[in-house]
Amino acid sequence: MTDQQWEPKILAFLCNWCSYAGADLAGIGRIQYPPNVRVIRVPCSGRVNPLYILRALQDGIDGVLVSGCHPGDCHYISGNYAARRKFVLFQRFLEHIGVEPGRVQFSWVSAAEGEKFAEVIRGVTEDVRTLGPAKRLVRKINE
Image (cartoon, rainbow, N blue to C red; front, side, top):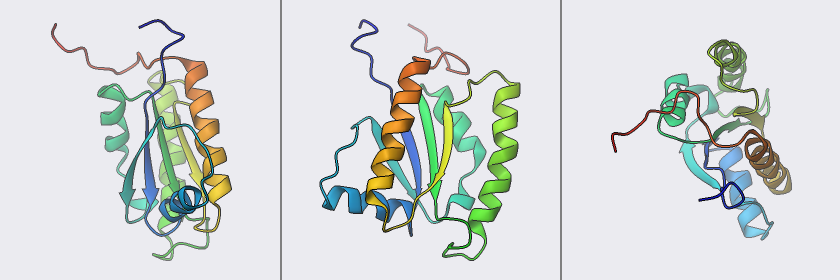
């Protein structure tokens, strides 16, 4: 496959109460966004274990998005605050081990923001496309 045919594989961990509902609203409203994303619905962005993100990168995922409720609007009161603290530290760790900034991204999308969800997906897809295929951390399978 040539580089012109390459399309990034993106994994999105979406909060059930806000970001997943925003994705659903984008679908209901027929708002177009790249089909490169595969969604995992989680109860709260604060429940996403950073090891899941590392595992996705090891398994060849080119980009990861974690998206939750806006700070202050969490269904679980403070889960998104925990997520924000956790992922600031995690971003520093990723930079330390050589994962390019932009390969893993975080966002806040409410249930009423279908258009914003589509914009976030477009942005993540373009950022990851610019970075190219993931090479750092990817496990090589015996051929």
